[in-house]
Figure 1 (cartoon, helix red, strand yellow):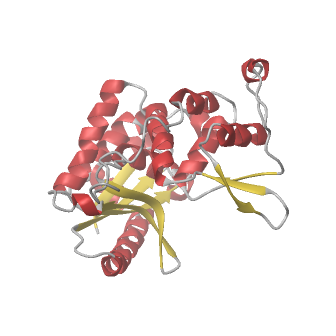
Figure 2 (figure 1 turned 135 degrees about the horizontal axis):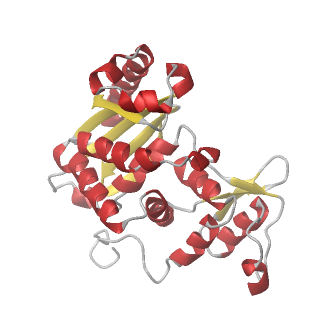
Length: 287
């Protein structure tokens, strides 16, 4: 950038990258997976009274029931969290330092959600269709069939309404082409997911992307998981709670599209609405 006034193709310098094994170590701890997802899903932080400064081999290899302070301190120690500020209660607030570091989190999350390498490749190909063709259907079908179908009941301990968005984000994440952001703030409102083409890549035949997500619990739909899985696509789309949430998602996406068009110049924006019924089914549409 200094020599040619051009952005580097890869924003992450491998010499500065955190060893992926250090992040993987955290996900193997009892609380680690939930903390990793929480940090990546939104602009969330970890709060600790103090940061632990030493990590002996014996301590790292001991039982996996480490507390939040240990996990936060370790992530800070290896450079994957930074001190953001101090709370009014005197605690330190730690956050992911930048979007480049966030890409390491997303890479690890992608491997957790889609452990088979060939399936991950299939998922990435489906994700490419979103920003090269403006077609979100293949990605929705992939997540429904290859993630929801193997969703373990034990995962409900840490899963929440943002889990679906994180699954999409993990496959769509591409900082070679995009400025990736989750929970983009526009006029005191937060857009669920935006992908804005990098300034040096605007000549490419790809789209800017905006996705608004909604979640309907099985209890609200008065369905069991088995009943939800056996519904036809048409019957699923006609459920009153699904129609209501889809309508809200479209309205919000259209509103945010206008706002984001005003913020950026020459966007090639494609907007989508996605509604998840529990962790069983997905409904999607253009917004």
